[in-house]
Length: 467
Image 1 (tube, helix red, strand yellow):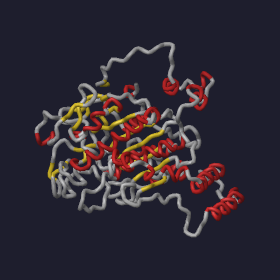
Image 2 (cartoon, rainbow, N blue to C red):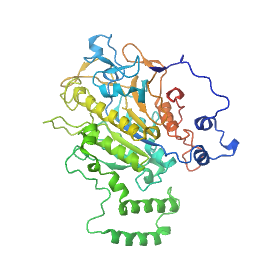
Image 3 (cartoon, rainbow, N blue to C red):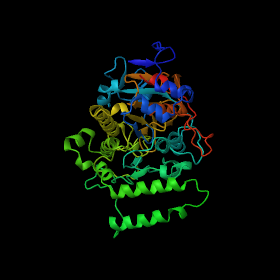
Image 4 (spheres, rainbow, N blue to C red):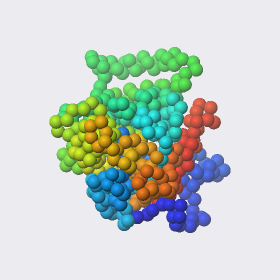
């Protein structure tokens, strides 16, 4: 295991080699006469632009039963699951994650994520914006990425698979509108309910359908008229310029008129063996779709880690990981709101995504993020109907893979009960700055129209996560 801590041994730098990341961090581009686009082109003209698949373990995964087990703790804390070895010596995970255990050399785990807000909707809004208590109009991480790294293919730049639902959901403006960046940077949302996902027989993405009785020829006629009147269509003082609006409208028309995006969203083109590899459940099929979107050129795909209902179950929520026991299912049972059901399916799907991206030569250019809005309490308690663990933001875990992240790394440490951070605390600000860094985006890039305020992130990238 490559364990990063305050005492980690770091190789001395080569004084004659300066990386692109070093230049971004030190702000030396102007001094050497390069703009960022010029630097990117100079380093590797044929490099594939980086993408991200951001998997939200909505509700908050228990760190004690997955990434940070405490087998020597009392049974009221440790839970029933045993640690198992991974492919990385010295690194163990929970027994319900055997496939991710075998793939440990391809990802890093942070065991020291921390903040102070145990409320779902607020914590989710914080995770989306990458900072504690963000302003109401703060754009989500995906909106910022698509603003600073526009797509070059005829696909939506930002896609959200499986809309948040239930009481844990953050306010919709925090992730569906683009914030102060505006609607051109809002995601295309696919999946508005339990059955609206590629795991459902007969599922079809309807986002590219034209209105009833409107042919593509009629749509093209309308588009020509719109272009002719475009200069009068955007009011003076609008935050969206006329040129930006025209570009947005042009892309929308091309998406409707073309076939590239439609094909990317069609998971039925995948062989049955590949669909089985990811798992025939909402998370598995949505992650397979996410891989197809990466291949097609989508910049950011957010996926809510809804693993579906067990046979015979009925419940109107996608809060898989909010395992209080309040839904009548013990956190350790084999039902939709229990680890026995959810974690093996997440293990299969996430491992398949990482390995599939690796097999296709896409992992180096694709950042995979797996995180919830917080973790769960060390002490197991009785919920309204069954046992569970409650909300716990003070110490929890996250996983990162691809895009330069050093595999086999475990960063930070928790105390004996995984209650508080013992070493290397990582805030949401630093976590998000690390994601930007992995995507070759300077976290300090100013997002406001004046060019001086509202940086993409106010955090500092965690350098030890990069190899």
